[in-house]
Length: 196
Image (cartoon, rainbow, N blue to C red; front, side):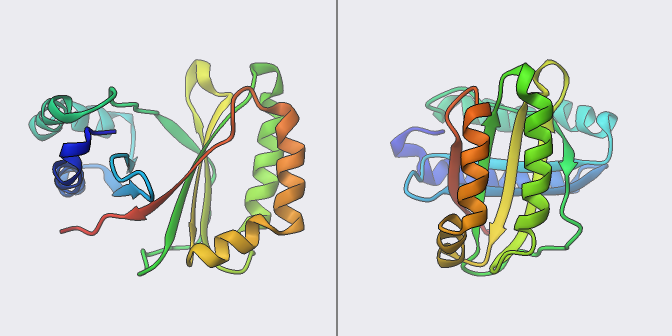
């Protein structure tokens, strides 16, 4: 999240970070997204071949410079979440014009983790067959925060996403997840930043 006067600078910084990450050894993918309706918020989604590749990237001069420049314009500190793939969509999903990117944080108490895992896994499998769904992945945080999940979904557009949220499948999922939640269901809509 950057300051209001720094939105363009934040977007440029995110684009440059992605280009630099792509050039690092062990990078499997990196993309930058800007929140719809709250253009001062960005999310970076990265995949790395292994822990050592990520560590090398974290110590690279360009990554340290990115953090230095971000510190000068941010509104709140960088929130980095290290995860592993819990339920990964096998489909290849290149970005498409007009696509809607949805990032959701699901937080449950530790005692509810296994129930949440079962529910999120089942829902991910079902969502991949929904009209307009391009990709649906669930990631789980590592270590002591394994009761926290990040859901990353791509929809063909806002209309497809809205229709799915009104479907019986979605409504059933939300009613089953609600009693397990330890925090509000944090769902945000994004557009992908082009490479610029």
